[in-house]
Length: 280
Image (cartoon, rainbow, N blue to C red; front, side, top):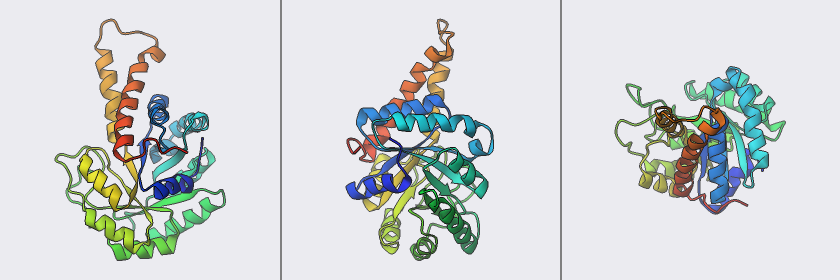
């Protein structure tokens, strides 16, 4: 069933667990994630990166995600990931997104607040809620990491914008880590307390040690983003199938194993964050 961002985050808050958010890029990655969620009876978020909305791919992919969510026997939120401007936000809403992430983290503090607040107000007209970001979550290839999210700033940001969830920088980054990151669990707890229990989001979930993720969830992380490892699960299987001399020519048959590979991977994250069996 298709639900909005507030509904799915509310489930996590009520149950004290975390919603796995899988970035999907085509029909097959979407199918793999949905199959995992249904098998484990878990609520999930399927999210799409902003470049797909800026390009024509989002137009074709969005109906797939919406149809999969409606058909699913578990709650599914269709979320824009890292939307930088109103352009991507507007297209995501037009194409059926039920959750929006507005990423103004690279902007000065006051400008981030202003942009995020505008998007929160815009989305409220269609009962869609917003995730903001404070503390720019970069990539593993960056020369240095920005300063970690400051609890006092997070409090001001949440109160000024009205976001439903807040993505924070606490030692995490996007991509495959060269070495396991050190996640500042204490800071997560401090931000959670300062923001009066606002749902927190951990980006860069690919490669963070399992124990760190479990501790982060206990400290207040209610949404875990996973993108890079979804791609690897899919592409590693595709590459393995391509080298087989007796591979099938029909693309739909060829894609069955990559779909299963994504499903198997997604199941590991669903179990890790405590979402298994939580679908209502």
